[in-house]
Image (cartoon, protein in one colour):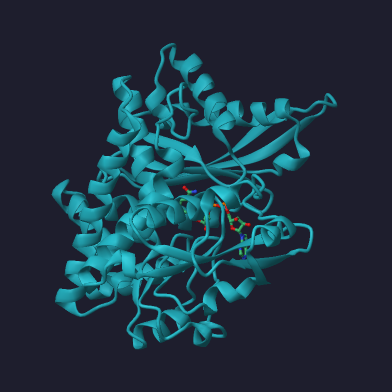
Length: 418
Ligand code: NAD
């Protein structure tokens, strides 16, 4: 999928064959064994990966995931998407991704620590603030990042906090990281409404999910005058999702009081607070101006796109890959303005970049400073994409890919690689 997306944009950009060959594949791939003495005294060997897709625009950046079904091919695709994401946000970093084939549910904390330390020992020469900067991803946390950093610093005999991001505040983390992705979604949404000549305070929105991205997106959108009438979440007990509607606007703090740490809303208590509890997919059918899918991939499909109200004017993709290609085409025909995922949710990686900059300087900014800089970055990324989309009469998604790939191709040309 990553390569076919790339091929189609490469054709539109008329990239030469050498550049295509270079960008279609990662620059470097590491695949290695991590032997760990387990709690029962036996040695288990885990498979670790790091793929550095491209570093023409700056050191590589990307998460590390722990997953039992991790494959080198998945990591390759994710590393390529990281290259485009950093390029569209116009931060001076390239793309990478890493992983270990393991299931942390079945590992003790000590065993997880040894996996992290083993991972970095195999890669120490190829990581670092000027080379490649990992971050958390699926099933890895700030604790895993600190173990990796500690091992790296032990090997080099110095403090190098800019080696990794996603650290806790006070241990090299950045203020504003928690808010960054959700706020970033709303910065791009605000610009889209501005361009369409719609006042935020005249709009209503419905949001899928009530986790990190959704909570902060709802909060900021309501702060700037909008009204969220519906949010949804996954119910672990019932193994299904529910939508929670309040026509005069949901109250984030009130809902947070009845939400667990995984973003699951307690339906009984929400009902007591006056929310209507509806089937999960109702979030998509609400008569609102804006939809924000902020839960998971593949949620707006060919099958349900017809249920979207004709009132909807903007979709801001908070989640990664929430819209299937058939739905994308139907939304374009219906003239819905779509802010594509790797633009709308780039706030997280932009703030990770800020964390790295602060860690390198060992000087940490105030939260308002971080969020102000985030707004500037997100707004200028949005303007660049919407300008090209208007000029070339193409979709926002195609325009975003064209800008990102063109920036990376130019950096490769400027360096004399191709
Ligand atoms: P999270 O785990 O904090 O929250 C996920 C939310 O989605 C929860 O409220 C959960 O109940 C809900 N949910 C899960 N399945 C659902 C379903 N079928 N229907 C309705 N709700 C459902 O996750 P998050 O960090 O908010 O991430 C959400 C999405 O945004 C993911 O696609 C993630 O990859 C993407 N993303 C996150 C970040 C970030 O910085 N957190 C950055 C970029 C992209």
